[in-house]
Figure (cartoon, rainbow, N blue to C red):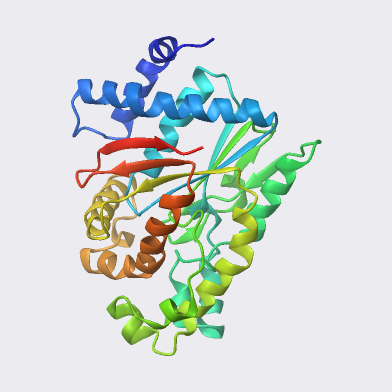
Length: 307
């Protein structure tokens, strides 16, 4: 029986290096160590047990509000599952499956101007994700290339830069803000929840289109997921604060300084996400198998295992 202590000794160094690389400097070394022992290792053991129980590729959905730290957490889980449990693991962000800028421009002319902005259901190429899941579920695996999206350019990278999956993964994590989102009732759709909806979607066309996508294509995709892990934000106000931090991080990494969003652009941008983010706090709090409760300072307060 593999122990938590063995796991800790095995991954500690790689974990701390990863946090430094990700520029996670707000926590002391002792706090980082505590998080590894009490949060990330227990979740990794839970994932390993679910994989063994299933006996074939495990597909996990990982979601949380914008800027909640999904990419960092999935990066940590990947280190532990790969290094200690020796699993072939692939983490895909639903963001990488955004439709091209050209496709979204076409949608903005044909359906609604707000569909030019990436983010909401309907702006992803769900068929590509489904194709990936279908290939995984087959006994005989055929290699596949998966897209990469560059947010600073707001467009998909050329195929030569895509992820090349040559071996069948044992664990797949699909990470993204709307992974596991459910549609709303018509009565909820009718009420605007911010000025973007009130003034730029007066006829409800955009909201209804997004909701229909959740009812159909996204519902079918999410039904292919074995378990959901959800990071619950304390309230929607923290999204602006956290998204600004995320944009600053992107600014440091990218050479495309002019194409990074300003404060006002981010403030408007998160309005696109508000409705579904709030609905997910209600829905995923009940349906997720693992539930991570976040504090306002970004700390994970506690982890609940529901199944």
